[in-house]
Image (cartoon, rainbow, N blue to C red; front, side, top):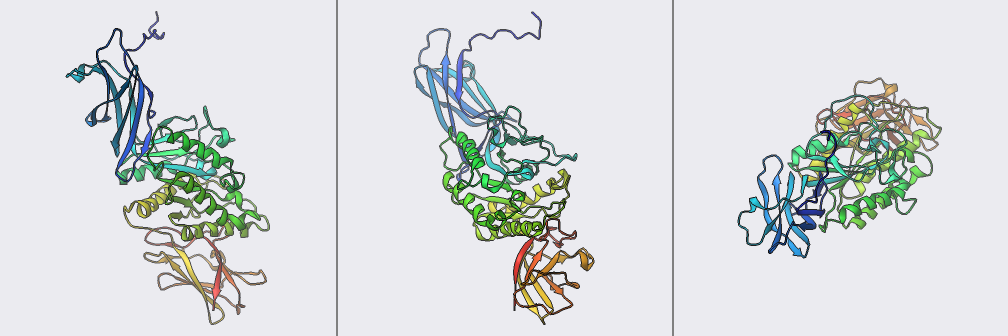
Amino acid sequence: MDRLTPRPIPALRGARIAAGPDDWRILQRQPDGTAELRLAGTWTLDGEATRPLVKARAVDEDTGAAVLPWTDAEMDGGRWSLVARLPAGGPYRIETCLSMAEQKQIEWSVRGDMIHHVGVGDVYVIAGQSNSAGYGKDPVHDPSEVGVHLLANDGRWRLAAHPMNDSTNIVHPANLEGGNPGHSPWLAFAKRVRRETGVPVGLVQTALGGSALAAWNPEEDGVLYRNLRAILDALREDASDPRLVAGVLWYQGCSDTSEPACDTYLERFGRFVAHLREDLGDPGLPFLTVQISRFTAKSEPTGDACWGKVREAQRRAAREIPRVAVVPAIDLPLCDAIHVASAGNLVLGERAARAVLGLFHGIGPVVRPPEPASAVLENGTRVRVHFEGVVERLYDWEVMPEFVPFCVETPDGRLLQPARVDYVHRSDVVLNFDRELPAGCVVHGAHRQNPFPGIPHDISTRLPMLSFYGLKVEG
């Protein structure tokens, strides 16, 4: 027989695992820092057994040190089951063995099945469209890391690696991509979160390129919402812990930059959030959202306004919906007309991690991007925009006035560019115009489909301001 020819394997003696976490599975830690481990299976011996007893334990994968000592299973004829609590950490190796109840030397028990690389930490759902699925095409160094694992489209857990939305052997075709995806921001995000929290991170891929919000809202089409629920329901089957995931990573909106979808984005996004929180029994489920970036293709007549309205809805969502955070992407490099480049995804992953760590884990400072709080008319020709969230001062890149990303819209629909812009008092921007402004104006900031470069940013945090649209000018 050739050495490469598979040899027949005899019927295995000992403990067999029929139900339990997959290799590489990340279990969501609960508030007490543990997660439920549920195992079940069968056992066999060549001859009759006297008082057979299946045992299971968990050991640190790196050292072999026990984190859960040998624990007796419940025996029911030829079947066994066990429920235990695993502490946060890992990856762990789950081991089983078959011994006799009176046996003292467990190390000489009959063999049992094992499960490898199981962790207890935080699980995040990846949802949204192509920039969430990951379409960065330029090369960048972003390697895999043990302790950051992915529930892939084939329904199995594995070491997380790009592309996250690989469609090989997909078992839930609702989020089947039409082409090959690429680099995603979420591996960099997860690696940073893992290093800061000290626990493994699991990623659950559900995003689909080109998907509209209607596909995620169960009150509309809802096809991707049902797909997301089916994936999470399957995770729920082998655990009874109430908390299933730590949060949702959401990057979506480009497919809603048309009328009337852009006008109702905030309301419909809020309903999506509310439904998922209710269905998961987690009213405080965190959402990390990304304000959509730019699109460099030729704009439609209403394109700038529609892109501005969606970005404004995303800005307001983080202010009006509890436990929703938003990070900007407007300044990131693209690899084509609409997709964030791989290098930009590394920056986005870092921004998202800092936001999640500060806002939802209490690790590090709470860093928010600058955003406008008010706009006031002064002397008829100046508009002072005051920003919140500025740590040190706003920096304007010293761009020429014609490239300033601010404009005022008059009640009759005219867009006026300021003749001069002054950055004063650390967090105020004064727009100077060469004419009297009528009552009823609004201010837009970096609202266009493809805004002018040089978006103001905080010189300390390096975060650009959030795009905004329709900020009422008072006074």
